[in-house]
Every structure is written in C-alpha cells, then in structure tokens.
Length: 188
Image (cartoon, rainbow, N blue to C red; front, side, top):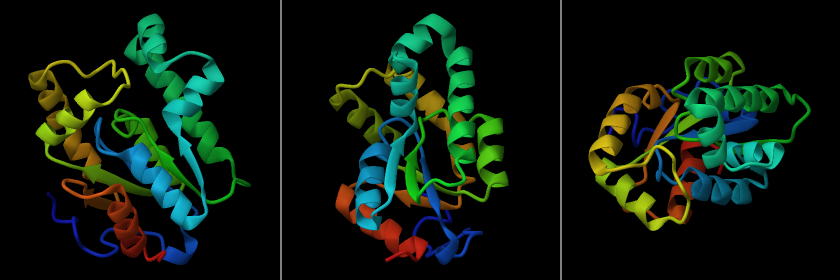
C-alpha cells in the first residue's frame, strides 16, 4: 500500500527498548480496536480505546456528542482527552486506538510527535473498510454511502501515511496482525 509497508521498523524514531506507548491510527473499519486489544494482550500492556474513554468519561456516546456538539465540538473533546492521556507520565506501557479522525487533527498529530509516541497506520483498500463497517453494529456518524466514505478516506490517507509504520490489514487475521506488529516494532 505504501513504501513503508512491509519494511521492518521503517520510520521508527524510537528504539524498541524505549517504546512505552503505541498509538494505532487509521480509517473506520481498519481494525484499530481489535488489533490493539490483541497487541496489548501479547505485550502485557494496558489497552485504551480513546473513543471508549471519551464515552465513559462524558457519559454519552460518540454519536450523541456529534449530535449535540457537532464534529468540531467532538474534536475539541477528543483533543482534550488525548492530551490528558499523553500527559499521564506515570502510566504503564500501553496500546492506544485512536478514532478515525483523531490523527487528522494537526494538533493531535503534533502532540504525539512532540511526545515521541510511536504511531502505526492500519490500512486496507477502501472497499474492504466500507464492507467491515457495514458488518459492525457500531454507529459511525461519518459513514454514509460508499462515495462519501471513499472521499473521506482519500482526504485522510495522506495524513495517516505520515505514521511511523504502515501495516496493510487486508486479508489478515487479527492475531497475525498483532504478531506482525510485534516483529516490526522489535518487541517480539
């Protein structure tokens, strides 16, 4: 999918022994939460889904926040939550799944870079991502028809591709993706 895909440790600025947090980014349906849980279990690290954390702390679903505050209101809440999470300096090592639009916000990408966080882009063909989203029970405020979905993906992909690592998830199991990440991060 990209020139970084498949290359061991391509783009990593942090040596494996110093990685304390891994942030998974990507479009809707990329597998950030599923792969994140599997990776955290293999590493024995804490797992955090930023959207779940926001819902727990706000007492509202992402959909409700979008409806009541709009996308810009949600993005403010998301940034504040990410900033708090990154500031937890005494936190144990962890794997964090970000929502599909989190890394697209320049302030969030800069926050992660400034704090030396390892960022991994989980990617797949847009048709596969759309298929996965249609199978899920989750309500996704920005998933509409395939044309809108594709347009949004194509706008976001160049920013996602700035991640430290890119992993193509197409046709792979969650377990094999977690194993591949362990190897590519030098943590196996």
